[in-house]
Every structure is written in C-alpha cells, then in structure tokens.
Amino acid sequence: MYLGVPKEVFPGEARVALTPESAKQLQKLGYDCLVQSGAGAAAGFSDAAYRDAGVELVDTAESLWAKADIIAKVRQPEDQELGYLAKGKTLISFFNPGDNQDGLDKAKASGANVIAMEMVPRISRAQKMDALSSMANIAGYRAVIEAGNNFGRFFTGQITAAGKVPPAKVLVVGAGVAGLAAIGTSTSLGAVTYAFDVRPEVAEQVESMGAEFVYLDFKEEQQDGAASGGYASVSSPEFREAQLAKFRELAPDIDIVITTALIPNRPAPKLWLEDMIKAMKPGSVIVDLAAERGGNAEGTVADEKVVTENGVTIIGYTDFPSRMAAQSSTLYATNIRHMMSDLTPEKNGQVVHDMEDDVIRGATVAFEGEITFPPPPPKVQ
Ligand code: NAD
Image 1 (spheres, rainbow, N blue to C red):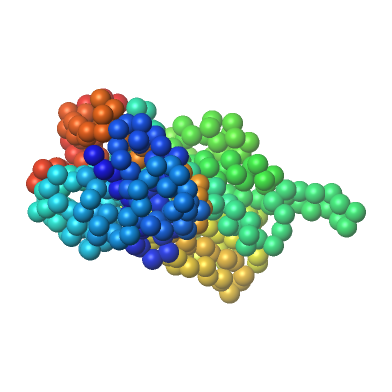
Image 2: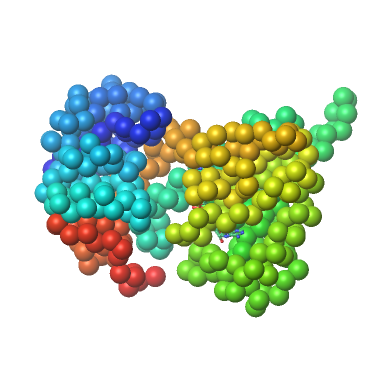
C-alpha cells in the first residue's frame, strides 16, 4: 500500500508528518512512501533527502491524495482535503472531532476511515503514539525560550564585576505535560522556579525537577475531587479563591508566568487576572499556552503578543510546536510510524484496522461509512 504525506495547507504551518528517517521505518513495515514536493521544506527536510530515503515525490496534493491508500498529515484537514477522502482510504491526522461535525459528516459520507491523533488514549501502551503529549512537551519548552527572548534579563543569578544579578523567578501554572517541560527548561536555565497544579500528586515530580511546589492553605478533602484519570476537573469556588489569593500574593515578585492549565473539553480556566498582571513588575512576561481555548490569563490574545500599560508582555501564540518544526516533525512522524506499526501486525504493507484494539478504536472517529466518535471508554487502563 502507498502511504502519502501532503504539504500542510494551514497558513504558517511548518510541520510535516513524514521525515526521511520515518520513511525508512515505514518501508520496513512494507509501505511505499509518497510525499508532496516541498512538504518538508519548512521543517528542514528537502525533496532530495526524501528521495535519498526512497520516497517518491508527487507534484500536487490532488495526485498525492488520489494515489495514497493511507494519508498522514498534521493539521485537521481543510475542506478541499476532506473532498479527497474516499472509501478504502485511511486518514491519520489531528482532526479536532469534538468540534468538527462537518469533518465527521464528510468522512462518513466518503466511507473513508479516519484516525484522529488527539484521540489516542493516554494509557501507557499508547504513549509512543501520543502526539498531544509530544507536541505539548515542545510547547512547554518553547514557552520558556520565548519568555526568555522577551525578558530583558538573565534567568540565572550571577555575581559579576559589574554587579550582582538576582535569578529570575518563574511560576508555572498547571504541571501536566507542557507544564513539566516548562519547569525542566526553566530550572535548567537557572531560574528559581515555582509550580502549581490542582492535582497535588504532581508535587513530588515538580520537586524532583528542582522546582518548588506552591501549596495552598486549604484542606485537600475540600478540593472537590480535583483529579480524575490524570486530568483535572473544575475546582470548587472556595478552592479557586484560595488559589487566586496565593497568585495575588506571588504576582509582585514573579518575573515570568507560564500558564498551561487545562480541563478537558472546557474553556481554559481564568487564573491570572488583571489585578495580578497590574501588580507585576514592568518587563515581566506571561506566556499563555492555553490561548487557543481562551487563555488562562486575562488580556491574552490568541496568536499575538501584547504589552500592557504597565509593561508586562503577554504572549498567546498557539503554534509553538510549528515554531520548532524540525523537532516537532521528527517526534510527530515517530508517533505516526508507531501508529502504523500497530496497524500493520504482519509488517506486510497492509493495514489491519482492528476495532477491537482499545487504542485504535479510541482514536478512530470514522470507520466504513459510520461516525465512531466519541469512543466507548477503554477496557484496559
Ligand atoms: P495536561 O492535561 O497534561 O496538563 C494540564 C494541567 O493543568 C493538568 O496537570 C491539570 O491538573 C492542570 N490544571 C487544570 N486546572 C488547573 C487550575 N485551575 N490550576 C492549576 N492547574 C490546573 O495538558 P498539556 O498537554 O500539558 O497541555 C497544556 C496546555 O497547553 C493545553 O491548553 C494545550 O492546549 C496547550 N498547548 C498549547 C500549544 C501552543 O502552541 N500554544 C501547543 C501544545 C499544547
């Protein structure tokens, strides 16, 4: 079978779902690989590099989609791409199925099978295919680098002949995948790093990375069951007040805030409020990773950098992984390769779409003319 990778069409998207290295691995699984000419250019993978890896180059998206049996891409398909879906084809891509009824309907009508990468269950067996995590890891790292680029001072403290420099103080709100990556990056740059999460079980992990966990003056049993299945649920009003009071106390002293707080299927909780921003020193930076869902900070504008009247920079970029396209393409292509490996038990270049397999079932949102989203809860944890 042919596995084809088109050039991404979303404006500014620099990632690509296949690298020359992942193509070699896919060939070992028995697939012939196709790539649209120029698809890897923005991520640093030239047509020549693909050709050297045995990949066939195709001139147009239309001919690529027509020839490929399996199409792998990064961004949710655009209208024109949905029009290329057809019975017998399998699309593997981010698909945003919770908010993409039109895409689901078109997939159903076409009879194509669609695997949505964001639906890969967060269970240990599926970690190698978990593209949300691999991309969040990059976003967390890049958020700190972006903060540093906009912060006019060192992260690490220094004693120099020209004077003593205090270390920067960084607060990471939300210690999930992106948050932990941000904490690791911040401590390794030498900043004094604090972190907060509604799930107190992450405190040990935070501390093992050299950061300080921010505890609230609050009884845990009042916390309204903050955690379920590794994800947070909405906090009680009392808990939220205690959290905001703690942030208010910290705001004048913190130089950089990285917010990553996420509750699945809900708008981002507002946690860094206007009065906290006003209390921050001029030159401070907020990087709001939740910008796409409305932002954790008041004043965040998605895809923009704004500077407040009191000189605080708020960054709401939603494309951090794309800003590190070589790295994110490499990890995403590996996620795709692992998915293909699970879909190819005989390593003979033939897809076996096993709907009894929890991971494949969980991620499949359209199958043989039916919408199969949302999936039933997984049988194995
Ligand atoms: P995750 O689920 O692993 O982590 C989110 C964390 O937030 C969890 O640990 C959760 O307990 C915590 N949380 C929830 N409510 C909270 C609250 N009120 N206070 C403190 N912590 C709270 O998610 P993730 O994969 O790390 O993603 C984090 C965010 O980064 C998401 O919003 C995601 O969409 C975003 N993201 C942005 C980009 C970008 O380019 N901007 C790229 C990738 C991911």
